[in-house]
Image 1 (tube, rainbow over the protein chains, first blue to last red):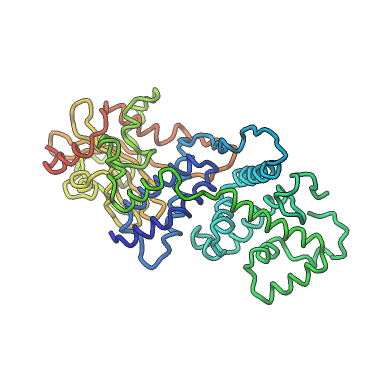
Image 2: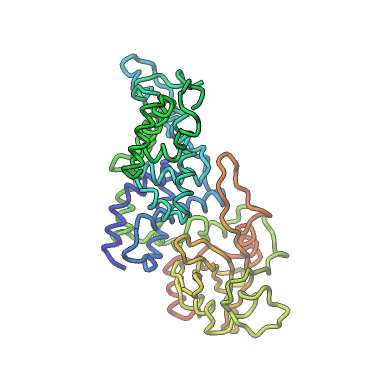
Length: 179
Length: 278
């Protein structure tokens, strides 16, 4: 099978890795999902239609592998990254850094709590940067469905961090929640 | 998001989807201009758009992975074919498969699933593709497609079992394909193979799982098959529990009943393939 497709696949790895990470909420699980997805893709490379989007094809495979793993309860509970939850000694110099990490942790948790269909859309559009139409094509759903799922997901995220005006990471979290 | 003292009536406010598309820069220029005019009049809407943008930035940042992640090189080598096939990883001990279907995982007894009585099972409709015609008694046929019992030479399943390596799919039309998952010997020393009917769309989801062994008459015999349920929606916070013990348990039951030994290595399987399983 074409080396050019393989090269393209390698070039896609950073995006695929991030997609798997956001989908699973765990770096370790993401790596296992990604490897399985790549193995599956390689065994089916002859089915890939040239001229179509390799990224969409791979995203579909990653989603399927992920669902498959959950389905068979192979998945370990999605652990937060060890360095996120650990206790960090308070130090004024790193206060800002702690808050930033805290907000990232909130975002990860919120995304992990989303229904899978909303999370998939959010990851494709908001994190990967696909257009609504590309996400709809990838997921095989109408663009209107993408928009409504995304709107629900994004509202939850927006409310979770609740950042009215100031740059997110410079403010304490959850002290200015809207009434 | 409501509760602010706003001069707008609710009907004036663009919906969340419109405000989101605006925040994401995905609105056509004329619609974006209209939303921008509305935002000038609504602190609540401005605040919401602000939150949408900030949370999106955080979401992107939350899953950034710096180059040089563990396994990066290994995966690239796998894709480019400059590393041993994943299938042959681990010193050629196991034929490459999806993790959950890796035969060796199952031939090592894990649970006391004994479903022997329920083993000679099944079959769902496969869209009219007759996969294994045989000359057995009609009463032994279960379902309409994959039949339990002797497979006629030259049928798709027999061809698959006789000629294809594990992981090498055989298209059968109807957006389906057959693929051997792994090979092993049963307690009687017969060569046996676990195979699947899988969807050949990108999902590659298995539809039917089955086990066949090569009998002394030179024919492959399907020993049992199970339907595989459609993948469920994943609901966060709810553990997935396969209904009725799951097809994995049913396949395990077939393997247990046969007394399946460890999975054959790729080289062992290759040797049998080249010798016509004799």
